[in-house]
Image (cartoon, rainbow, N blue to C red; front, side, top):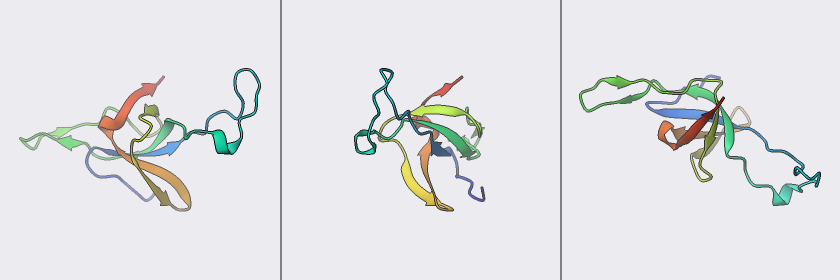
Length: 95
């Protein structure tokens, strides 16, 4: 991808949730919530301390993450819907 986020921001691709419940019921598109799980596409160079020292990001491209429901800004790049968010909006990395 030809886009690199600045500072402590990350570019995230949402991972689509299941179309069925655990009980086997099919969920219609109108009832689905946007997933709060994604894959990191690109990472900025990191935040800076007041002294100017660089703080390296804790995540890297390819990590699967969980983020808050209202986190990030939706953007469309090359026809694909992605999210740009601060690293601090990430709740955790899925192992």
